[in-house]
Image (cartoon, rainbow, N blue to C red; front, side, top):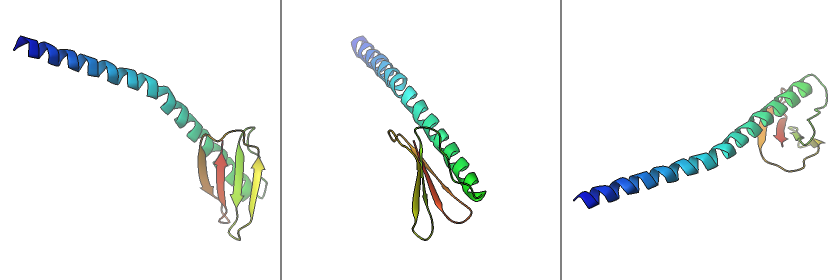
Length: 101
């Protein structure tokens, strides 16, 4: 009976170490994705504010803003190196703003 208890304790310890190693591996990826999404929201909000003011969007370097107007016209601003995340906003005139970065 003591051997069974020792095996159960050993299995529990191994499972705990495995979970901790998985947590340590995925936490930086989650934090990076959150930061990218937060910045995408900021870029989209800035583009919406500029469109509502009658100006053209000017995204930061490495970001792209796609504006799709209700009549079907689509305009693209900025350049995209690699897409990691995106966020959406809607301007006052009904234009859909897609910020990608």
